[in-house]
Image (cartoon, rainbow, N blue to C red; front, top):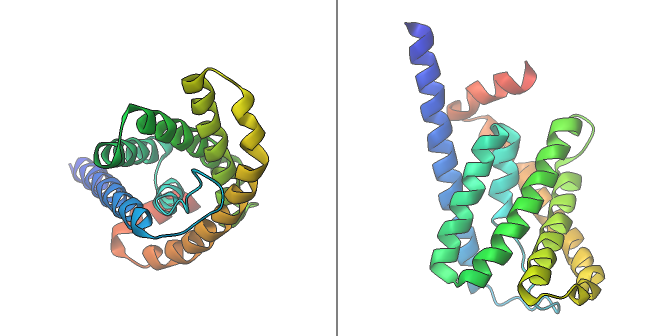
Length: 185
């Protein structure tokens, strides 16, 4: 019986963490929208919500992080946008999620969170360009890729640094104890 209770407790903790991370990601998106930063590349953003995506991938299972990404993307699309913004957001988020999730799966011990974040930033931009190609029915939009790759590297570094500090801080909380055991097992 205690095994069932323990399993239920861990499932509840996962749900709580996913919900909190999704809410924080939405708030970070709102804050980012309020920051008057001119990135000099149209459409480029800081990607603050990706702090929570990478952190969720680090602590939880890929399917938990996927749920968080979908929640965050849908909620921010409802707040900010239109169908096209949802299309661009979901494509960028999925490309980034897959890239970062794969890198954590195969190279958690060999790759830094900053390196994984950089790849996630670049993948996000490739996903958005793919969405633009589908939406505008032209692949000429990929001429924009070199500029977006530079921005992906820069924002990936910033997000990775934030996650590098956030992970140890969260690891000290009892809420994350069960997930640290899974990581070392």
